[in-house]
Length: 100
Length: 100
DNA sequence: TTGGTATATCGGGAAAAGTCGATATATATT
DNA sequence: AATATATATCGACTTTTCCCGATATACCAA
Image (cartoon, rainbow over all chains, first blue to last red):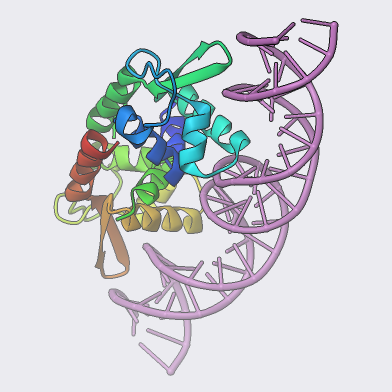
């Protein structure tokens, strides 16, 4: 994964907030119905409501984060749930400590 | 310092290279005359030659890195020397480990 | 199969970033 | 003071990013 793409994904206030919100999904998304936070994450609509941007923008932002390996997506029925990608975040840590 | 600004500064291949080159200034800039690498760093012209972009572009890139606290500048005579800002880099580390 | 939700994708306009050449500024030398 | 060199700033143009509304796709329910 290209380092530049990772940093570009992080170069946006809303995308940083999303990553941060996903650290505490139960606290930050108390309205998600049938929540299975631990296993799958938070669905797009919940994130969109909290961010206050359009549905298309948030969907795009989430796929930018996904392409950078910072989140993973799981489709369950009509919903797509996103959660933090611990592996990608650890990789970022390594990049900063060794290659930067 | 705004986190987004830091990540934007890192969202460019040349700027990442510059940061990396400055880890080993003696190796990467063997032609710098009157080198005082440890104390002040590497001058703009040397970085420009190595990067192969225009003088104005590199000057701008260096000030972007400086505004993000990733490098520091020292003026000595006609030259401006840039080196890595260890404090800023450690701060980035902390951001990634605690706020991301 | 028809309609209803959730998400993804497309097309576009505005703003920001990338990059250049030209010029300005600061410093050094003669 | 005049000139030369290193760096910074400016103006312009191109490419990318931001963000939207509209539409398409996937899935579910009746």
